[in-house]
Length: 377
Ligand SMILES: [Zn+2]
Ligand SMILES: [Zn+2]
Image 1 (tube, protein in one colour):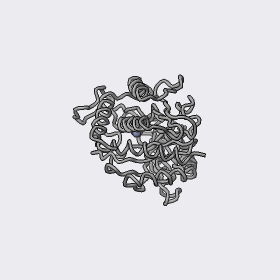
Image 2 (tube, rainbow, N blue to C red):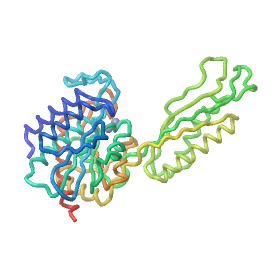
Image 3 (tube, rainbow, N blue to C red):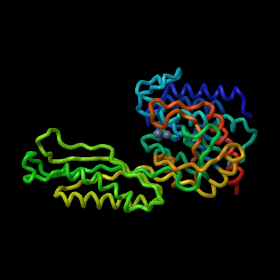
Image 4 (cartoon, rainbow, N blue to C red):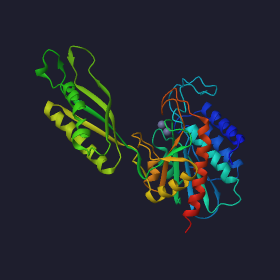
C-alpha cells in the first residue's frame, strides 16, 4: 500500500503547508486549500456557515459516523530552521507540527476516498484555533461534530521515533488553568515602609507559598504543575509601589486535583494578602480540560494500531490540547505519533521528519475502518 509516490506526494503537501502558516482563527488560505483538496477527492463539504475557518467534510453514508480530527493553525513564532521550505509568512510558523497533522489527515482522506465502499460515514474535521484553545468549542457550537459516534485525533511527538504510537486510556494531556493575581497595598517611600502596605513582599512570599500546593496538598502519585511565569511591580529603587501582580498556570490530570489546586491557590493567596496587610484580586481562567481517552475505544484503537506500529504507553504531557473539548462530549481517542524531531513543540528551530507522515496517514486510515466496523449496531 505504501508507495514511494505516496511519500513524495505527502512530503510535497506538508512542505507547501509549512511554507504558508496562518495564525489561529485566521486560517483562510489554509481552509481554502483543504476544502479544494477534499472536494477534488469527492467529499461532501458540510462546513457550517458559522465557522469562519476550518473545514468539515464527509464521505460514505449512514451509521456509524466516525470523526477524524486535525488542527490547522500556526504560532506567532519567527522560524529559524533554514529549511528550503521554511515559513514565507514573517513571524508565523508551524512550530507545533499542525502542518504534519493536516497532511496526515489529507492522506487518510485520500485513501478512504479510494475505498470501493465504506461501512458508514467518515467525517473529516479540520479544526481552527487549537493554539488559542477556542477552535474545538467553535466547531462544536457550529454543529460540526453533532452526530458523531466517535472521534479520533493525534499530536505528533518529536521525541518518539517514526512508526511509534503512544496510546493510553484516561488522561493523556493536562487540564489547563490560568491565573492572574494583583496585590493592592499602600505606596510609600522606600525608607518608611511602616507608612505603607508593601505588595512586593506579599507577592514574593506568595510565589513561594503556592508551590506548597504541589508538595503538601496534592497526592504525590498524581502529577500537578504550578508555574508563576510573569511578575511585575514597582518602577524605581526608592519607592514602594501601590500594587504588584503576577500570572501563571496550573496543570492537572483529573478533576479532583484540578478543584483542589484552585481551592488551595485561592486560600493561599488570600491568606498571604491578609498576613501582609494587602488586598488580593484573583482572576482564574478555566482552559481546556484533560484529554481523556475513552477506555473501550482506546482498547480497540490499541489493538488495531499494534497490528501496524510499535505501540507504547506514553508519559502524559503537561501541555494542554483543546481536543479535550471533544473528548468530554464524544467517545474519543487521542494519540501521540512519532515525528522524530530535533527539538520540541513551539521551538523556533523545530524540524519534523517527513518519514513520519505515512504511519500517521495509516493510523487514521486503519482506525477509521476498524471503528466503522466495530461501532456498527
Ligand atoms: Zn501547540
Ligand atoms: Zn499542537
